[in-house]
Image (cartoon, rainbow, N blue to C red; front, side, top):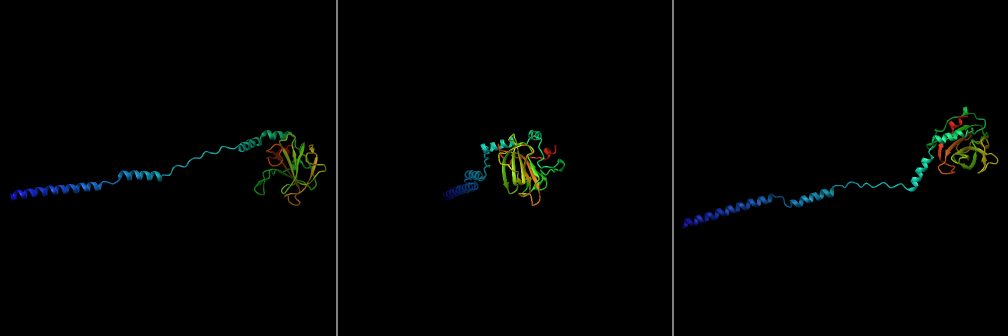
Length: 232
């Protein structure tokens, strides 16, 4: 009887140890498994997605306005072409200072001036009071006094597409007024040193331009007078 009890205790103890060992193994196995692995993985993916910078949105370029289109069309229409030069050459322009020969002219069109400006004209030196002549038929579109040009005169070509500009004048000739019709060779003014010409630097500043606006008198695209006058 005692031996049976010992055997029974031994069997119980064996199974208890076996059960305890199995419980420990199972506990260790569960502890090695990452908890909330699915949650962490999805959370990491979410964080990665949230931290990733979205590519910048490409905003469409604004469509050009009607005024921009009009300005571009005006620039194209007013660009200087060979047709402009041929027309002006056909006008047989007169050297606009009395007594000056073509051999005395100097091409100063591309020379630099103050404030990073290009000259866009030629200077014709002559004594003070020398008559300034109309280079072509036309009409006086504007008489104007400016800081740079001093006493100036703008003549509109008969085609209404070109303006002849005379600056640094001493004074206008008698009878000259806005609207006066001019004939090639008419005396319109006298050589001076007004504006920024410099005291005693008597000369005529002569320029030709193609106005941007119809019947405009200021600005416009410049055309070099030198080769047109050198045909004389």
